[in-house]
Length: 210
Image (cartoon, rainbow, N blue to C red):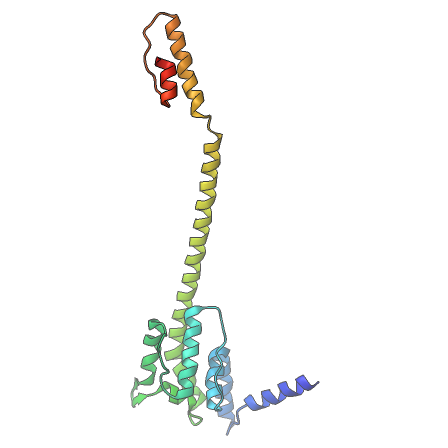
């Protein structure tokens, strides 16, 4: 019961007040078109809360969202020390985007309560979504490549084990040496000169031609 009350209070805190029906409809469209992970980052900073990015398990995408949240909280690009260069190159320009009417700071626009939800959605679709989609694709490609490498490694291991087993099934070289001895003895019996066929070791060499 107490948990339900807390969750209800949290939901009430997260709701925005709309001045008119048009604004409420814009927000409804924003919620429908913008992924929850990005939407929570923007809405949290608008309310002055610390944005918490979700973990997707995709390395580049997670780092992008983390730095995006930190940048939104500061109204400027966050400290990029230790950040992947790919992420830096995608987020740094957002602090100074050229528009028809001048330049805007995307992080400030997202945080501005007076900025329409419609404009926020357009900025997401033109500046954030393409970058995030590209990073997700890169993450998935890397995961796929790692799976292929692991599969190939396992196949090589299995092949090596098969080769070792096959080598173990081969007759010992001593059998081949004995065959050459038998051939030599047959030749001696027929009174023909002995010829060397092959030798495996000095020991068998002495037996065959000693």
